[in-house]
Amino acid sequence: MARGTAGADLLITNVTVGAHPGAAMIQGCDVVERSGRIHAVRPRAENPEPVEGPVLDADGRVLAAGFWNCHVHFIDGVWSRARRSETGALQRALDDMLVSRGFTSVVDLGSNSRNTLPLIARIEAGELTGPTIHTATEPIHPARGVPFYTRESVSWFLRWALPAPRTPAGARRAARRGLRRGAHVIKLFTGSYVEPDRIKAMTSKVADAAVGEAHQQGVLVFAHPSNREGLKVALDAGVDVIAHVPDETEGTESLLLACAAQGKRLVPTLHMFAHTVTKSPTYTDPIDQALRTFWESGGRILFGTDVGYMDEYDTAGEFEALHRCGLGAPEILASLTTEPAAAFGDTSLGTVEPGMVADLTLLETRSGDIEPRHLGDIAAVVKDGRVLQGSGELSVSGPPGASR
Ligand SMILES: [Zn+2]
Image (cartoon, rainbow, N blue to C red; front, top):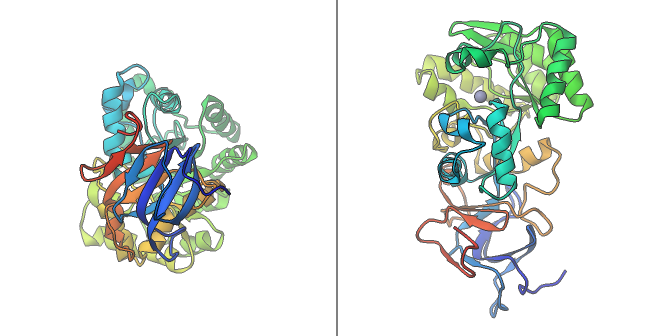
């Protein structure tokens, strides 16, 4: 491979970098990007050749692969005009909710496809700069099982569009319709809070049919379980990812062990429960314990916050909660990078190595011994060859318009 920086689209100089979570951190590196890919990661050159593109001086900060948030929603008012509204408001919302938190890929687990699909199209067209969005579009509910909080927020004339099939044939149709429209994953409410104190489970036949259709088309299925019954339906149907720890944990221990043993992945969203329901330990302690059960038995974790449903954008609370449940910084970093890439079967994302897509997240910390709290403090994100969200202290030089 050529060693030169001439022709580089971006040079990030003086970074501290480990190729993958847990790898030794090397200080004083240069990372060269060319045509959207990492071209080289190497010790900083004494006499660097001139670079054609911009140069970002990281001043010793830690560079990681771009972060994933595997549980988000685009349901706030700002997204409701995503097809037509001017780019300013949408860009600010993308920056505030996702980019400034370090996310270069997200999984939208339920939104109005009339908003999310145009949003994705505008990002792909380069009109907006944002993460890669994998969307479930409209989730599939149990028959007469739309959650109470969705009923409150969706106007009555749109409720008919929410899939809630009664039969296996209806479930297959709902999955097919979503995928034809542009969904990248399928989301099932296998246990739905139809009232604040009542959970309705999806029938196994409906769940089996939806999962069968999704897997036939090669897409992942995420399930929102809520309780033991919802988790059992999800596990029996063969879903790929559990979208929350069940918050009604009674009787879920053996099922969580089975999920771990079968390689199911789990998005904890621990902080969301504390933030949106109650911080009372009588509620949160059993949820923490359920995650520990899963994690300590070898379960695989994908980072996710449920932001969009939860109005708190700061990620610090989730990092703190995961750490409390036994995950160290390398494991949390894996849940943000290598684990989601593996779940989606994407071998071009997740590590900082030559040949990989140059989705990158630059942390504020300069410590080679990173702690979970450092993962919430983001200096910049590199996406599609652009440096985003650089704080005032970051120095980016080079052609004007190459960064913002
Ligand atoms: Zn959610």
